[in-house]
Length: 113
Length: 112
Image (cartoon, rainbow over all chains, first blue to last red):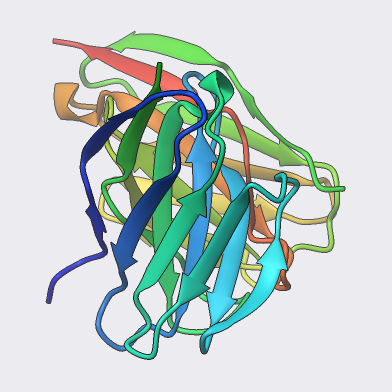
């Protein structure tokens, strides 16, 4: 079975632009979470979606938004990019909401110049 | 608010040694604790998940323990190998809508 997949692998954007990152969960998993990891730090929780509804949100500004589609894949959108948004963005999938083990994808490396 | 701390931040040991990585958390009301491995520039690989009702979990040369009352977890790696070199992260889950809370990780180097 395929694991969690994310696209694109790498992305370079300019300040002020908008970016969309994509994630496909493990087959059968209904929950997707997004994390931001800056260099030298542990991942920080951004969003959790389950059954296409937002179930949790971390301490991130409204420039960050996400959605989950009927096939349980997900998109993370970031508007008005700042230099500080440069990071590895990780997607994780789990069977259920809140209590199941989370399995991570390879991440998308975003560089904002 | 949950906070997770990992000690040491970095560790370098000769091949073959047994070693222990430490993880502490401030809120004992966790649902589970998960250990991950991360290779440079890569995603996270799940190693072990310990439910709050469990005391330990084992997978091959890895053993993770959990003591909720003291807010501590340890990852024991037996007979270390150069391929074990990576950053090891622990993450606590409250079982709700707040996602996982991660420590900053322990950067492990196993010298051949």
